[in-house]
Amino acid sequence: MKAQILVVEDQPATLDLICDVLKEEGFEVQQAQSTAGARDSLRRAAPELLILDRGLPDGDGLDFLKELRTEEKWAHLPVLILTARKAVEDRVLGLKGGADDYLAKPFNTTELVARVEALLRRSGKEAPPPFQVVGELKLEFESRRAFAKGKEVALSAKEFDLLWFMISNKNRVLTRDFLLQHVWGYEEGLDLTTKVVDVTVSHLREKLGPAGSVITAVRGFGYRLDA
Image (cartoon, rainbow, N blue to C red; front, side):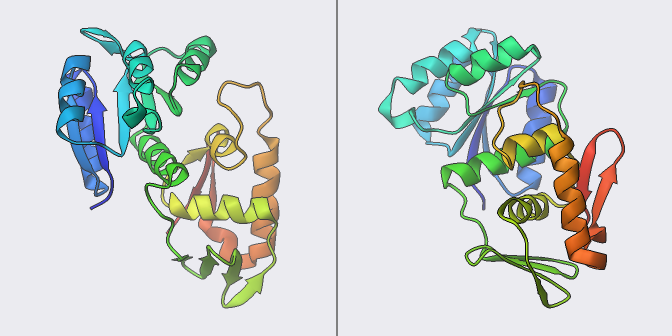
């Protein structure tokens, strides 16, 4: 069983979708449809991550989050804000209000899972595996060594980080903006060129040779690593 996640969302259809997707990925999921319900759930069991909607029937989820952050027990709980508010100003407000990540509705479920797993890794709640293997590729986490068809390939630090992240999210389409956030550490909403992603992927494919064919470009969206 993976980490325990509390999902706070007042729309039943959306709540069921999120919970079903997370359970399919092996997470233990608790749910609530209001800030009052969320507090009851937090008293019963401590989650390792919180997915929080902003538009709740008994208040703004962001106000609830600000209250949580004043309590020592929840000061470092990873929180993903989920909301229909898409403006850059809203994202900045959410991040400054204590959120660790921010995802606008409607959302892609594979991206939701990828963001959840990235938050858990960053918080240390989910330790990375010692190595990963996809096709003819093998990556070793501690030594940061990469192998293609059994032969070691010299990768730059960012190339290794990108390949590790893509393997960790294999079979999922990852947008360039998403990769900039989670591999390069750029904040969402900044006016940044995504060309650096394309250049790094190109160099990575060239170094990996035929083994790099598992990295597929998805026109107008981003990249996917096929297992």
